[in-house]
Length: 415
Image (cartoon, rainbow, N blue to C red; front, side, top):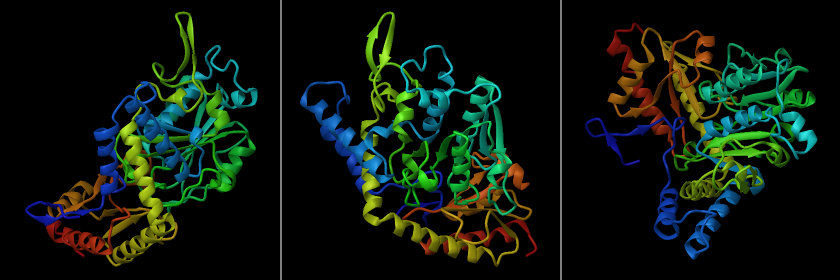
């Protein structure tokens, strides 16, 4: 990256977990759509509208293939947060009179929640995969329960929270703080044995690992969400995968144009998925850009991306291990980790650590990273996080560590 910051220092960008930088092919794809095909998707009968619609649906097919899904099971949203909220609100709306009329009875039965039912999350969830479920519990009278973690950042066994009352399991595949890559198989199998829905937050896994929704956790999951801006794609677009039979039964989240079938003054009927969940003018240019990002990563090879991430993780953890004044959060070994290293410095607030790094051109994230309960569980107020992208180099990790080594002198720490 040629960008310089802070008095001409070369930028060392280690905040990809918050948002990724974009390859030129992604920028070009989005610009080309606006320059040559810009029209309202699914609306006009003229050639430009046809081209826009074709580009949009081709993008959907590309993104779906990237995660092993079929096009009709992929819904475009604003971001990963909206994708998770879509599911939570649809489950809330499912309890309304007539909301599931005509739906497959078996699918419909899985969508209804009420008092006595339980929603299970984990203590390490990003707020985007916690607060929507808190609100769903409040609206339906269901009870929210959560799986704890061990001191090294692994999930406790599923039977500690998942039981016969569980109706929803919402879990991250990779923690955005601890970077723990969970084997979700026992948790998904436990939830499935009780007929519960499984919702996976894949925002931190899809940029780094091969993800196949049909094979994940030994047989696939019901819903999976990720966001474009973390996976080399544009801002303003997210993805929700849902099992087709569940999407077909779910009532809509947002209503209006594009998602309807027949509209009369007395009432309306809704289009089949995925259009049912894409009210208004779709995010066509962003979808085209995201498809270009998926093509880019496919060309690189997700196995190679994952291997590169492990090289960076091993290098970062090995270097930090010799600094006794640094506490790394999460597993000490690189193998269970993906994409990020969060840490604290003895006696120095993470915001101050981040300022020292920023003064030397190193961009990192500081704070609770939208995972406040997890930080409380770890006994820290906040942390500093470095996170990697496919473009990150070991030399940039070295530059970060060199900048970090100035922190003790700046704050008078005895090391």
